[in-house]
Image (cartoon, rainbow over all chains, first blue to last red):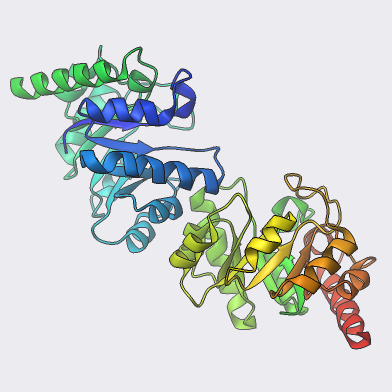
Amino acid sequence: MRGVYLVTDRDLCCNRSLLDVVLQAVQSGTAYVQLREKDLSTHDFVEEAIAVKKLLLPFHVPLIINDRIDVALACGADGVHIGQNDMPYETARRLMGDRAMIGLSVETWADVEASQNLDVDYIGVSPVFPTPTKADTKEAWGLEGLQKIKSFSRHPLVAIGGINAFNARTVVQAGADCLAVVSAVCSADDPAAAVINLNDIINSALREK
Amino acid sequence: MRGVYLVTDRDLCCNRSLLDVVLQAVQSGTAYVQLREKDLSTHDFVEEAIAVKKLLLPFHVPLIINDRIDVALACGADGVHIGQNDMPYETARRLMGDRAMIGLSVETWADVEASQNLDVDYIGVSPVFPTPTKADTKEAWGLEGLQKIKSFSRHPLVAIGGINAFNARTVVQAGADCLAVVSAVCSADDPAAAVINLNDIINSALREK
């Protein structure tokens, strides 16, 4: 795994449609899109997920659904991202199948240790920095926490939480394989330019490694 | 279908545990249990659903999950109940399989007509009477609406909304096959006695038909 991992937030799209922001993001090289909806009805979430899946298909960008395995199965998503309050990993794997991509958020060191025994496709290091877009998380890992996880874990690391163009380089240097961003792209004046800039930072930081 | 169909509401259990109320209800002859949770995390909903499924197993009472097909698949539920804002019926059937029990709420006459073309196992006539336990529904059907649906629909009818021991007889007389109850059992001083009483009313009303 590598690159920009967009986590959507309709409310942060600054009056642009979510589909429009996602399209701009994938046209500019976003590697993964995670659809996160906490307030939509199942009906509307499924409808949105089907539309996003259709949009991503020609770009071969995987669609990952946050939490809702029913929505993922309904829209033919490529995977799910689960947190510690979501479906237990083993159940998620059983329902999604062996080929699905399953990511798991780690919020404590116990979560990191437990994830070593799971065939997750990546772990989401959450949050790296304190962030207002996800208020239900534990203490931020910081760059030191990220480094500690990198030296311990056998899984690819998707860093999330307060990541933007100003700190992206340090997050990659600390061991992140992917940078998950919400407002840094959803709320950007130019989402396409924001993705291109983040990819440049990631690639240059990886070259220096 | 026939009998008492319990729809759970943790907040209406008057400080008793949901499992305790469900146990009393099924020991006294409840025919179906629908687990409805709108505020729990997926993790906690799955955990609760697994516990209820285990409790119901020796009674051979089907467990039906409201809306969440992921939770239904995770706990091995017997079916799902979907509303007009939930998963589209065809998708629900595809994910749940042919043997699952799938009920669909009808809130308008257009819903009733559309359901004729679907292989649903029952339709939920919702609400029969105005009710505070489900505020997001349309106008109440009333007994006349229920009668009209009975004379038109090919599906068993589960009546829901404001049903209690005082109006149960008229609801059965108007054509309900099952009486779905929430507070009439969850909030009863004696949930077991409430179910026995409702079953007596149903059976006597059916004998008189």
